[in-house]
Structures are given as C-alpha cells and as structure tokens.
Length: 176
Image 1 (cartoon, rainbow, N blue to C red):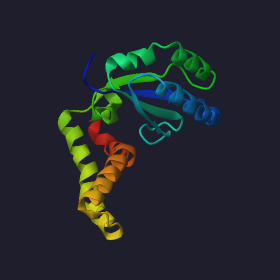
Image 2: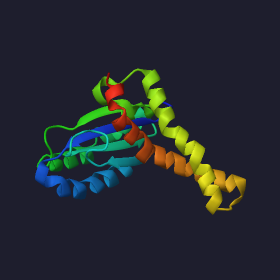
Image 3: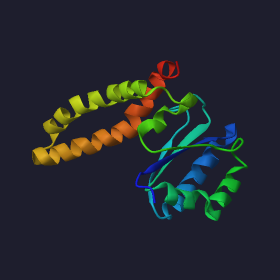
Image 4: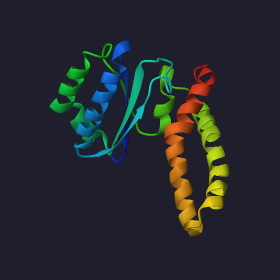
C-alpha cells in the first residue's frame, strides 16, 4: 500500500440550466465517497473560481492512499451516481490525480515547480504575517492556543481561498 495521500480533482461541466440540480446531486456523491475506507475529505469549488467556465464545478477528493482511492473509483456506487449526473452534465468529467498541493496548478499541463513555489509563497506569506497578530488582538487562549487557532485558519484560508484565488490571478504567468 502506498504511504502517500492522493488527491483527485474532478472537473464537471454542467448544463447551463442545471446548476441547481448539480448542487443537489453533489452532496450525495460526497456522502457516498465518505463511506469508503481511506476517505479524508472533499472540497467543492464553485464555477468561475479555479476555471474560467461559469458552469464548471471542481470537486477535490482526498484519500489516504492510491489503493484506497481505487476502491472508490472502481465502485458500483460511484458508477451509478455518475450515470445519474449524465442528464445534467456535459460529457465525461475530467479527472486528475496528485499527491501534493500541485493539484491547484494543474490547468494547462502544469507550470514549472518554481512558478508553483512562487504562487504558493505569495498566497501564504500574507496569511502567516498578518493573521496571527490579528488573532492575538481578539483571543487570549495563551500563545499555544492562539497559535493553534491561527494555524488552523491559515490552512483553511490557504486551501479554500488564497491558493485558488492566486492561481486565478496568476494564471497568465503560470500558463506562460
């Protein structure tokens, strides 16, 4: 069994008038996926944040290993849910597999590592610099407690806001 977590990024293009139907279906596939051994979490990125398409959702599933992810990928449960989605999605979903933060940079074949490093640095530095001081002004759980809260907020903000936004802002450079 592999010792590395694996991230699966799935791009679903949804028919223009069926966005709400997709939003109702998506929690069902996430719940089904969460029942499989090795499931870690799911992130859902609304259209227009990571990609330029106003009708493309991005689902990010993380599993403890490639072997455990494969059990989900090959499952009848997943196949049935994807068959349901055929009525409100366009074509087959695009799927990519990664073992690190590089999944945020996968558009267009992936940029060089130095560009990924720079965008990650520019995304995380303001959070690390400003957020702990801001937290310390309002909370008093001691230095370890405040540090724990700041770190948790930095990780969540980095994953859900800063890195997706930075990739969108710097997409012209990442793709060049």
